[in-house]
Image (cartoon, rainbow, N blue to C red):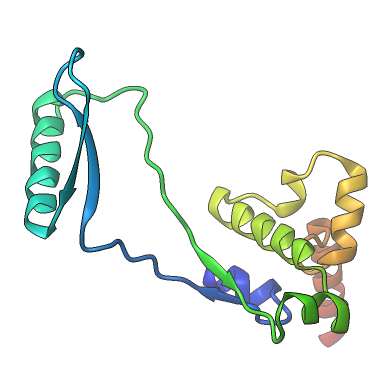
Length: 158
């Protein structure tokens, strides 16, 4: 992801972001179907205990990994921060930069890097593709044309 950002982010406005969870969490639990929800604050020791219980349950349900767990999902959060030199009004009015366009480009960049496909292949609508090409030509350059240009450059240097 860092290499993709360095390659296409001209203004170097994207920064890695670290998300840290709080020291205590709130848990809603319903003991059975007839009882109401109970809210409880969990501190570090209780969090560790609950996490161990969850992994023990997962271990038991999968028979220590010998049974596949179908229809399961893993959610991963990738966070970046957009840095602009001025506040939002200064960025829009004084610098004439649309932050929504920057967010579109970075979302497309990350989707391309995570899914391992060319950013052009993620956009189905031709009018959207041409609009986005104007915003970020480095991200959406035609790979066939780039290969031809690289070949011509290589041949010219020989």
